[in-house]
Amino acid sequence: MPPWSRPLVACAAVALPMLASAQVAMLRPGAAGPGPASIAAALKPDGQMRYALGAGASYSSSTGANAASVNFGAESAVATTDARWRFGGRALWTRTVGETGSEGMTVLLTQESQHRWRGRTWLREKFSVLPGLRAGESMRTTLETGLAIVASPFCRIDLGVLQRYDGYAAAKNGDPEFVTAINLRLP
Image (cartoon, rainbow, N blue to C red; front, top):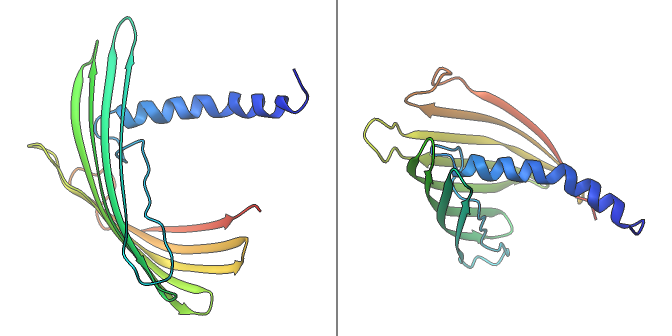
């Protein structure tokens, strides 16, 4: 084995179990986020609306069970030098057959905007709706607000508040979550 391939093998050994568990979580009905395929409309600060469409499918089979999923997504985005807007929707259909068979459909609608406040500081908000599609399912909504401070071309600091509503939530509706993050970009 060449010496340059050892770090790749080590990285794959760590990443593969996480990717496998993420795929299983996405196939589970009622999973937090629909769709293994991710789409994003390109952002250029020229004021023109841009669109992206995506679709994906997966099928896996073993001796005791099989699973299938199909997902679709669409997003539109517009950006200027002082504001960014994104609108999108995703749908995921899943079916598993085996010891515990199930079938489910999930839809997610989102709206997100960022507005330049001063220099390198941006106000941001994101509103997401996960409607209940079957009898007995509740609608879930999430509102995220906050500041994004660009410290350098390689570092951004995010401070925010996350508010969720879920008809069947274990946590009380109305309990805000405070979110902080430091994002680093490696050249």
